[in-house]
Image 1 (cartoon, rainbow, N blue to C red):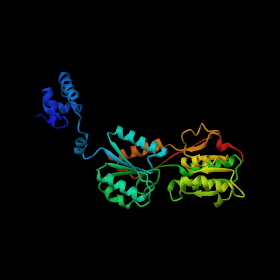
Image 2: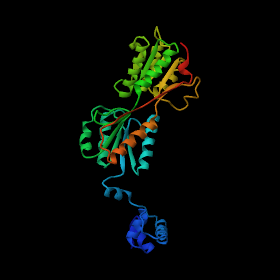
Image 3: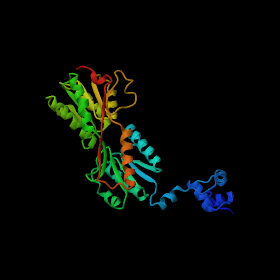
Image 4: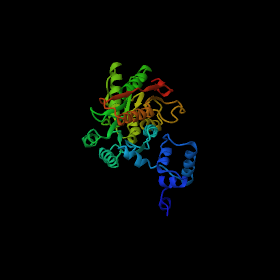
Length: 329
């Protein structure tokens, strides 16, 4: 009975079928020199006929790696994180690595569970969109040689981090509304405890301050996206309602649009069909693909032996005027 009849075909099966030595098959499979063209063709024919596949796990384990990385994001269903994830996968593929991914749901305990589970599976490195601020649990893994990069939010002063310019983007969006004549601009964002939301609120306050406008807490609402529409309706029902609103992320922008209230609006994050609405939605766009790719390239650089000081990379945003942010008061 041959080995292939008991399971997957092996190099020995290929060598037997091609009538060559095992070392010859190894050279063909690994693209090494020292094999004649005729012999290589005979080995290749045997490989195709038997359906032989190289055991990548065994190969990389011999190199001291598993050829896999872990990716922890907030929500795999969120379009922003979907773009980030795909970019990480594309970079990992170029480096011959697989990606294990999971969603934390903004729960620090879930983040910790996912990270430690990935570590127990022997991943070479991690890309983490942190849900919490305490990452002491990660120290033993880092000391053991696992590389880690934090993306979208910082994970600590001694860790590689790739961010977008959240405060600068919000400042640009709110300043745009002010330049179009608005003096009462609402801010509707995610929970202020989330780093990105806090930074966008900071940019909002800076824009008001530089324009000589007061910071009015009655025009600020933070919390889950599902509550954003109700919060905006309450503001618009007040005695002195806002004439414009800055929304803190794509989901909140959609919630604001669902209210059916027509007012000037700039949203942080671009989203599908934003340009097809009437008016088109003016947005502050960040680039999740570039964010994911930058984080992944930095991670693989570390895995290749770069022992330099931790880096903090901040990527720019851009304002895209489409009509909603240019409506007058």
